[in-house]
Image 1 (cartoon, rainbow, N blue to C red):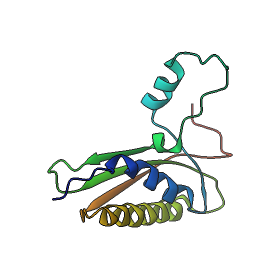
Image 2 (image 1 turned 135 degrees about the horizontal axis):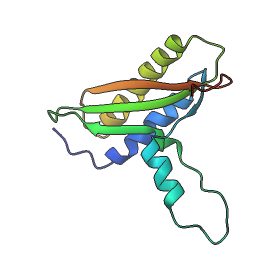
Image 3 (image 1 turned 60 degrees about the horizontal axis):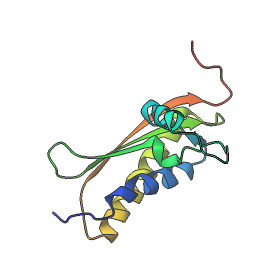
Image 4 (image 1 turned 120 degrees about the horizontal axis):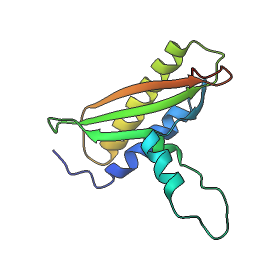
Length: 126
């Protein structure tokens, strides 16, 4: 198995692929990332901190070390069935991350999990 020096780029590759899917309004960062951004010291220029889309993607080595597990947290825009959008996100992220790893000379299996956190325009559950 090849060592992947740019494995930290996987969240960026996955987020770009997910955001390109019609029906994806945004990516929803994990709560821990949002809390970390909120707790960071205030910047002197007082510009609001923007959480990058990569914060909504988690890329971990598979437990047995034979590949990658990617989790993508999506906010959908509504006009398409959530299942169809989630399948498209899954397929595009899997293809993009596999191509990225292959380009690095690390042909490894990739599993993708898509979590739909909400549909924009619908009220959130209390």
